[in-house]
Image (cartoon, rainbow, N blue to C red; front, side, top):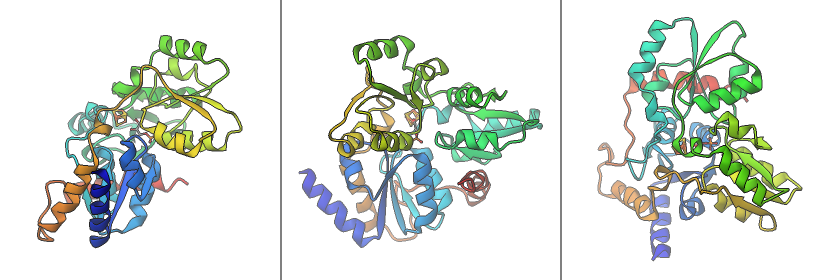
Length: 311
Ligand code: 13P
Ligand code: SF4
């Protein structure tokens, strides 16, 4: 059954010159058919370079919006439109604009896990892979508001020994990783390295050997000569980790961190969104298409491009 779906996806992909971008957290069967699999930064860079007529984005809405902003000529399709990020929704554009109005002296740094409308209100974006570099580039005498992830913000502030203000947002999945559960899994697996995503609380990050983006974890484990790892992030990353490191012992965190939004898309949804291209006139947006106002995209592109200028 899934083989038939995969074959149809391949046919339609070729017919429409479509590329499939997928985040490291999505279901294994989507990771397997993706043309590009990566973390938020890697996917943003690819989206800016691709120039493909159709991009099918397997991930959540802020990622598909970023792809659209960076590749405005492409049709960007998100196979399940309700796949969102609860943390991104914790900062509304209205509230961010109000902060800007009442705190004109602050530099606003937005984690890419934010809506396009929020990005249009800020000075610069960052991902978990480059947050330290971006914040470090801001002159020391400037005040900073880091949004929407208070955990990533606090972790960066601690590493850089820099005072900042934090928006009260958080990722419900990473924020739910507790110190008690970390102590339990470390005690059960002595000698294993413990890696976490910097969306975890500073208390949890303090117990980790390393805090990294999903792309950072994949690279680190691939290149490490160590053999045992506990992975403190969303469970979708386990699929690629196991394929790339067949001889290493890699275990997911317990209780298993699972982002329901990242799991909303299945193969059948990808097929349906490619099929929608068949019966839609070129000029008509399919129900899967990410459509953003041109002016908003122009505003939101600036802070993303400022981020991408950092290599
Ligand atoms: P990465 O950029 O590390 O892939 O993280 C994205 C994300 O949503 C983490 O929850
Ligand atoms: Fe958002 Fe957290 Fe899901 Fe990432 S894991 S998409 S930050 S809710």
